[in-house]
Amino acid sequence: KVGMNVQDLSKLLHRDTAEIIKKLFLLGIVTNQNQSLDEDTIEILAADYGIEAKQKEEEDLADIDRFFDDAAVNEENLEPRAPVVTIMGHVDHGKTTLLDYLRKTNVTAGEAGGITQHIGAYQARLDGRLITFLDTPGHAAFTEMRARGANITDITVLVVAADDGVQPQTIEAINHAKAAGTPIIVAVNKIDKEGANPDQVINQLMAYDLVPEEYGGSTIFVKISAKMGQNVDQLLEMILLEADVLELKADPTVPARGSVIEARLDKGRGPVSTVLVQQGTLHVGDPVVVGNTYGRIRTMQNENGQDIKEAKPATPVQITGLNEVPSAGDRFVVMADEKSARAAGEERAKRAREEVRNSSSVVTLDTLFNTM
Ligand code: GTP
Ligand code: MG
Image 1: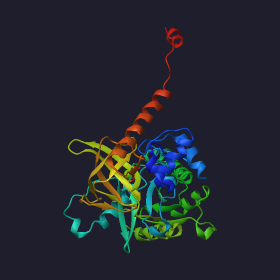
Image 2: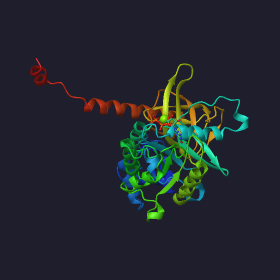
Image 3: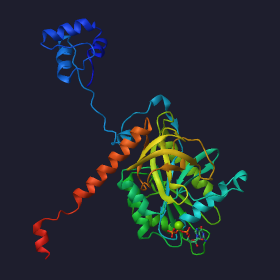
Image 4: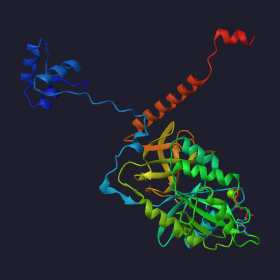
């Protein structure tokens, strides 16, 4: 370790300071017990005692992705968590209607008087089990999140209108879900409509490897009416069934980490972000690095606008307290203290600026003259 003095080293090696000083003297180095030793000296001395001194590799504070990749969670602390579901599909096929229906039936009596605000994500409940829905504005957010390596969706619900069938954005959604490696549950919607032909939708989707069980495949199809609420509970049941297969777990004991769903600047409150906690428990007061910015969680609210003090894995929350507005798909990590959060955030911002600078074209005399 750099900066170690003779006294520290003697403790580490379980030897008298006098012995260390004598040994160093024999090596031609005159020291006292408070003198700090350089790396080479420590190495030579340790080798003399048959110990290999290795400097601990300095950890890159700015590399927050390692918190997602490493196995820093304790297997013993893993607990089941709610599945995170994204609803996708062609324009007007009924995504918002489905989400609205779920939201309406999930507003409990106690919250009825409160203001339910849009936070870009919310949770539905069936038989006491929670499902987290991401209410992202379709493909753009999904693509962006995937591009940032934030694979936060466990299951994709593909909404296809039974009176319109497979359309370009349906295919796009299938490709997105496949690329992200999430299982697809098909919700054939608008079955209440005259002229609806759900079986034709199923036929069309088979060309995209979405084959129902009765035809030897493994894709779950649920025929629903988002407007009337028909079979929506069955859809939730199927989502939970799929979640059981995935055995989704998280460790609520580690420092929280997760992803930004959406963020904006609020005139009064500053940067306001909806984040999904993916691992650990997020608390008010936690120092965080988020994308290329940082801060300390000042307030935290659930989907119903209620102030909460902590959020467990798979919970979407709206937070304030960041210095700048992060981007959708940015990852966040709770750091040990505000100082390291700041250092990590500033370093990430610096690297991002450098990347932009390096990628922008360099103006040379040649290019200048060529354009004249
Ligand atoms: P975009 O956000 O524009 O991509 O559309 P969307 O997929 O969110 O569709 P939206 O929920 O806005 O529904 C479009 C229209 O279809 C609305 O007029 C809904 O009322 C209607 N609709 C949605 N689901 C159903 C349904 O189950 N039955 C009937 N009859 N109409 C439906
Ligand atoms: Mg919509």
